[in-house]
Length: 442
Ligand code: GLC
Image 1 (tube, rainbow, N blue to C red):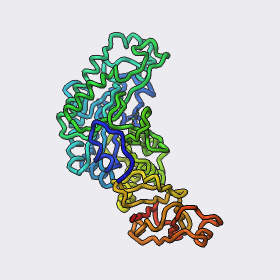
Image 2 (cartoon, protein in one colour):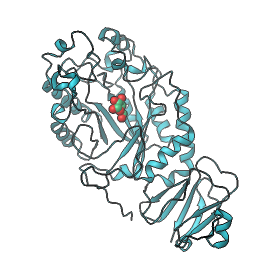
Image 3 (cartoon, protein in one colour):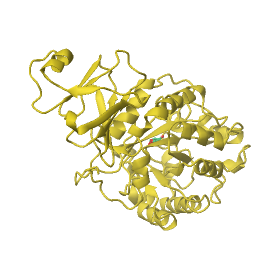
Image 4 (tube, protein in one colour):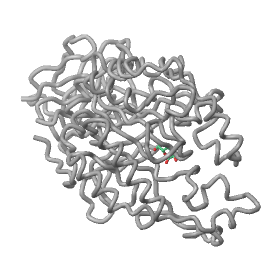
């Protein structure tokens, strides 16, 4: 068994740390301007102009089954969909607002179709719910609000009642966790500190657990879906730490106790979460695979984002990126599912990342930088290895003790490591993207 103990938390995280890989889906009105989901904020778009997206929203090619199938074929085991993003638009048929998908030309409850289809495909179902709301009339104007630069911003802010908005969120979370069957993840987004610059506004622009009334929100969620996994962005620690758009370089630890926590990195294909037509910083296949491998090698999960177009489909660039995962996972997923950070006794050779099965029985070497012909694994006693093979085709990888002779072939060094070590023989040509050697340990 893995010797890493995670800090206990209220939700059911057992399945989550086995499944490791999920799909984040950012979908909303912002898919129409197609220049970032924060476009309303970035361009301070006035209400009447933003309303044009609402009046014309019609993702006519949307097919929930197709999304679910693509997610599964990409090796993803769960998904998290933006039921409401910061723009305030709801993809579900809420009784508490008119600003919802069923009032657009599209008319259908997309959240319902999503939840049913993903569940039917055998995937776990998660809901992202934005705490921030740039449409709700009671949501106080703050440092991120699109109206903050308006001449009458302070006046617009006056009389807005945060407690009413907090009650609205509870009403919606109740709907989301009552009307759509079993929900496995609730992903709140996000809390932020006040800034003096916005002193004219309520809370000087910041919002956190007191304003969201996060404790009540969480209590409600747990009463409706007891095992649900909840992230920490409402400002109350729950189950999940969520490093965003960067790669932690160690297992994420609890800031006070130093314990290992359950964590999930979230990443984009190209920088924006919502569909962005003109973005050109799409990640390479190597980077995509490395993000997943690096994350699992540090005991974390990866939530990889797709921003569907306003027609309701994944665009060809996203399809291509997802296929990179699908192709790689088809043969290599054994090093991902049910795996975690390798035991501290193993330290990865240069250019490699390790994962290990939760039960300790298999060790996986990911060759991120492919060495020529030989791989020396210092400190891995060859006596511990029963058999070694590539995952991509199940072909044997020969190995022998690292001796004076093999050492000089491989490294041109005189001194040998002081611990028994192993050298693997590799084909001269790299067998595919990020090859993985599977070691059956004795
Ligand atoms: C940020 C952004 C947001 C995105 C989220 C994903 O908080 O505000 O647009 O949904 O990160 O982690």
